[in-house]
Image 1 (cartoon, one colour):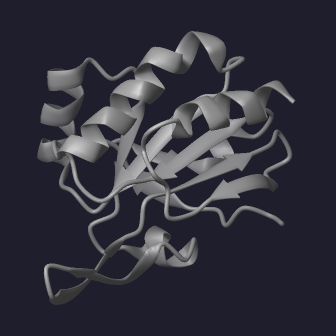
Image 2 (image 1 turned 180 degrees about the horizontal axis):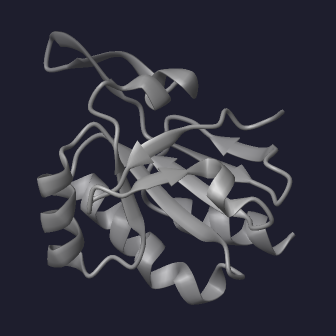
Length: 145
């Protein structure tokens, strides 16, 4: 399946397009919020796994602002871009903007998901409703195959 293309601003306000990475593997991960326990663990796991990722590009996407992304990157020394999807257009495109329930409240938000996109722009693997523990290892393993 072809990965939906998009352009979003990163933490520095530069527009980043999926098309910019044609010819490379891309690990596109959607996460709920900057600086929350699960999201911090996931981001740091991706950071720590970078040497094992065979040159793949890692891109994180959430609905957080540019400023929140800048702080999150600085606090955790993240070596990859975080894209701003405040209008959740790209999250909807990938089907990860969904109704969620927490403590009896219903609201829309990002369901933690990761997509592995090959050099031709095809989604070759997807993980939905991701549990953080062990997830990045699964992504590294998929890149190795």
